[in-house]
Length: 369
Image 1: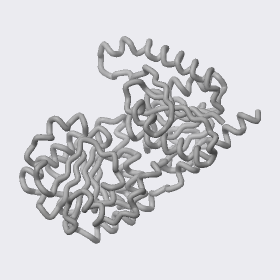
Image 2 (image 1 turned 180 degrees about the vertical axis):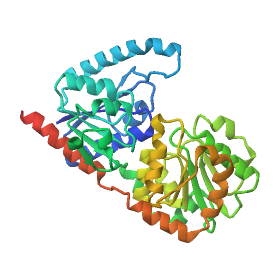
Image 3 (image 1 turned 135 degrees about the vertical axis):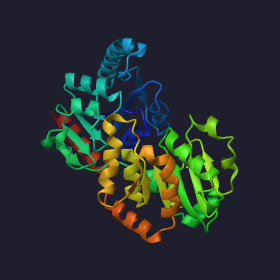
Image 4 (image 1 turned 45 degrees about the vertical axis):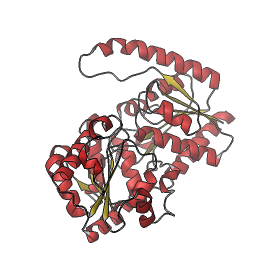
């Protein structure tokens, strides 16, 4: 069987896509998988590292503000549609998968024109524009939140949860103490892991820098801090990074190690991040990004907050509230234990396998016909 997987742009789209591909290979090792991404985006590097071929499309999003980039938008769409069509003709997939992001649009539109069945995987509690448009034509739509029938036909929805990278739990054999020793941090201090997604987050970075500079974060709290590659030049020489209880990184490859070391996680509320926290049962302070479509990260966070499964700090309040909340909460063992228990109820450890099984079922029907 041949499967096209399209989408990307952020780790929140790419890593679920790779998890689905890995699950397909686990269920049916002879499955031939080809990815489609957007040229210049993260998937063009991460997907080959995961062992899968990828074709890049020149497609980009339409800017809401007036910009010269919008003049080239129609040409990039047409070129992307033509390139996707040529790939489909050559590869001849039995089923196509869209995970959201720029590349999903033209790829799945061509699949629809060519009569190739396709499915969608929507990570967020507020469906993205591409998936909303394509949802009525999809064969199946895999979702991670309830009440998604306000975006998609109810009879096409399958509640699976978000697929998580298999290696995310790979450090479970390592104890918390061993993880801290590996990082060179005190094993007797409470540990907070702070990250702003694959690109970093200015709000979180500024709040942490302020908290360290003002001494709000004491030496009895370890800080693991992913600053982000685009912010690293600005922060890397700051004196707070020289503190013995701080380990700062531009980018983190070994996320399982950081999760294992952490007593508390401070992060954005991207769908993939929320799913990883649930799977690992990690107490978290969520700071939803206000810069995402339809404020969907706040919706993601509120789904947890309403069940007492996470703590919310608004982006606008982060400068004054985040570090103070973090420094207090990390020492409240009863509260941390309660948050860990509650967020664990959101875990869907077999999401990728369920999605893979449904894809193989749809693809097999196409082959037989």
